[in-house]
Picture 1 (spheres, rainbow, N blue to C red):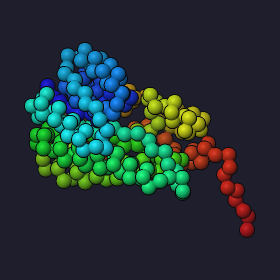
Picture 2 (picture 1 turned 180 degrees about the vertical axis):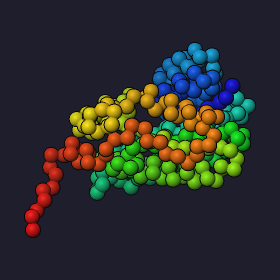
Picture 3 (picture 1 turned 30 degrees about the horizontal axis):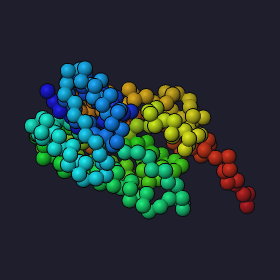
Picture 4 (picture 1 turned 120 degrees about the vertical axis):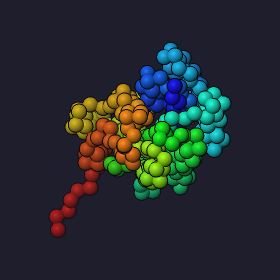
Length: 264
């Protein structure tokens, strides 16, 4: 059986990806931050597929958490690692200009590009040539600037660039690295997003080609494909999952106080 590591794998998109990989007979190491109850529920559910599931708690920004994830792979699966999905994170609400702190900027950098590098450097000592698959989960916010997403968007953009550089550097080993950038996906965090960005629900159906918001099940099969042997010729790619029309709609719906044009 293959082994996959998913950071942030016990809820939302991460859990949906775990379900897809469990159905394909992957044993799983799932990282989570602090919600032990959700982690145990995920483990119980996934093990019904006759696979082994190991959960590891900790803040992905901390080196000791990443060390613990890979120590679990070493101890529970003899160091076997076939796929890694880097998903763990959260939105850092900060707005330009002026409505942010540099501590928020540093936090976002620790959360996304720096954690990604740490995971990559570890994973590459475990993955066998010709077998490894890496998927970094980014966001539509990298390409579509929106209110209060500047810190997270910039950090995920950095993660994408790093992923593509890794893709080129390790291609001779037959290990692939790809990026999936979901649009707005309804997860457990959806209600929280609506409190921060109440204009979001006003935007469909015009904001997305499919006329609806995404579900976690819309993202997971794509990630599972990129983790599979069938994706061996695909690397350095960015998949926009749930593309939407972006900044025009944010401007239209997010404020009633748009600056007026002055005729000269």
